[in-house]
Amino acid sequence: MPSLPSAPALSVVVPVFNEADNIRPLVDEIRAALDGRLAYEIVYVDDGSSDATPHSLAAARADGAPLRVIRHAACCGQSAAVATGVAAARGPVIATLDGDGQNDPANIPDLMAVLEAADDPDRLLVAGLRAKRKDTWIKRVSSRIANRVRGGLLRDNTPDTGCGLKVFTRAAFLDMPRFDHMHRFLPALMIRRGGRVVSVPVNHRPRERGASKYGTLDRLAVGIVDLFGVFWLQRRASRPVVSEVDLGGAGPEEGAS
Image 1 (cartoon, rainbow, N blue to C red):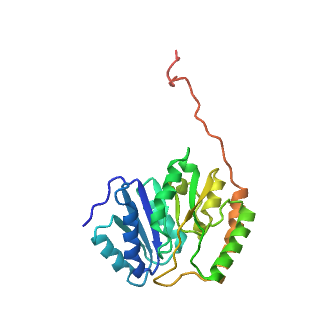
Image 2: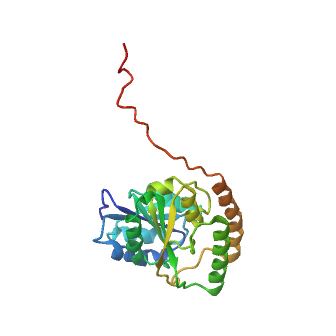
Image 3: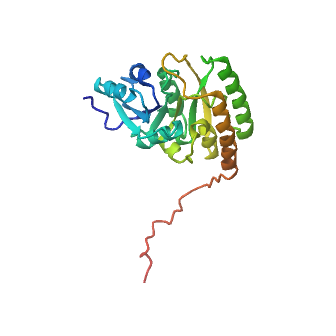
């Protein structure tokens, strides 16, 4: 049985639902991208899969991957799975990947470098930008429209918020409000808390195994509701400027007669 790093610098969080055939190839790619670079862990969240995903995860763990597996008893959705993974993560920095193999783990170090160079990493989200998407034309067109509408309303400064490859600190994520489908609005939520977003071009691959869990119409329907919900959150955000008062070292008993 492999040993996990006692204090990982990075936790790679991967939410999956019925992705049995994609587990081993993606885990191998994550290891190839990160082995020897830093101490890391891979946190898979199985969102109530009904196929052989649990077996595939167990096999990857037995083969030496620094892998932890958390399972939802029933499917709760991608945002819930991401939140579960981040909450369970032991690393201070989080990288998220879609479990379908379309994101390239080799880009994780590039996004991490941008975060590490920031003056305040807790105020930065580094988002992948799929410059050459390998999706169907209907997905590309609908995504382009959605990004323009969302960007116009939320001003989130992110041309591709749907890319599953993102890097941010665990502390930043835990400071954000959580709700269903929040993973689509992480850039807006970062800006809401006074942070900023940097987009980095990343590789994108066609899905080679399994089937997409999203359709164009159902994604559009929930997206409209969520869009106005996040707009409401933005308008009610408060950003207090906090500083600690220096009391000169006087304790409660000093100066007492």
